[in-house]
Length: 387
Image (cartoon, rainbow, N blue to C red; front, side):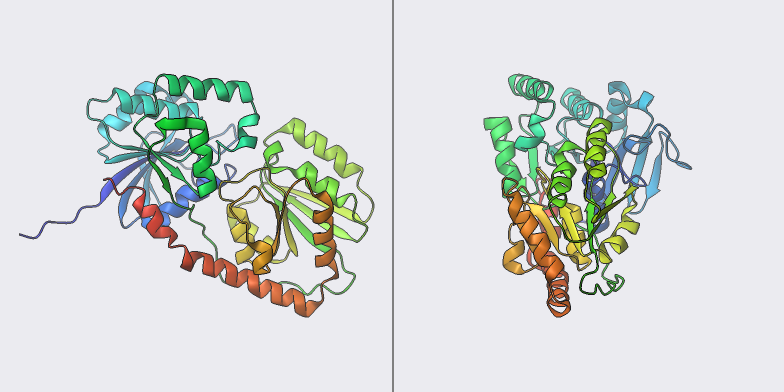
């Protein structure tokens, strides 16, 4: 008798999800996972009822009930509901085959589900994707608090026996360094990007026109906007900088504001605040350069999305994207070499239209080839192989 095939259920905990977008990469990663594997797995997602940094819950969203969102069932929890008893009840009453956590440090959507899983009579396997939380730079931010939690979790073996998801070999090394011998099962699977190919045509930039530069990310120390501003302060050609992203750190934004006010007249700055991903790619498509000198990315959705819009990127060497200059699609430069950043921007500014058009074509080809060559969907399916 032929055995009937049944979809397995993955119970996902993530701090923020659709329709949110201010939470950045983790929202995109989980949403793209659901879009790509929603027919293979039954995804149940437990998340907050509001976007990152917002005080009000989403409009027209039911709280505390399973609702359909694209290919997943989602339960939105108010802050009052984000406690151990309720999360334990959800896990007990929701049949599932594996628990998938999308943070190591988040107290409500990682620590509480993990504790509930440990306390459950019928334990299910756990997969944890730290989403870049273990990079050296990330761990330096609020160092004492993070190091204390990591040491405590290792001491009581809280995360022993789980499977870790790293988005690259670089992140796998970060996990191993932070967790040590308790991280015995690390599965490398790149985050899943999502982008449209029917992008608008890029306006022609004539010789001498301002270079349209885009910084698109959360406004915080990790993303290094102040470094970008200090680079632009030393450039004498006309620049139009557009800054897009939510303000995560108001004090840091005040610091950046003082740098913006001191920029020379040839550098004009526009701050657009947070922008929905659907509106971001058209903006990328009309920009000449994505400038993101980040201090660390485990993946960097905005980088591949810019390339898919035909826009070259200028980034630090603290990301998985290490072959940009070799492929002719941008530059990957150590943060210690500010003069090389300046040279790259001047080179792009002086680039002839034909050469610029060739670079744009290479960006488009690079993004398409990335999806074909890396077999990313299969990598992500293998995360849950032990089902």
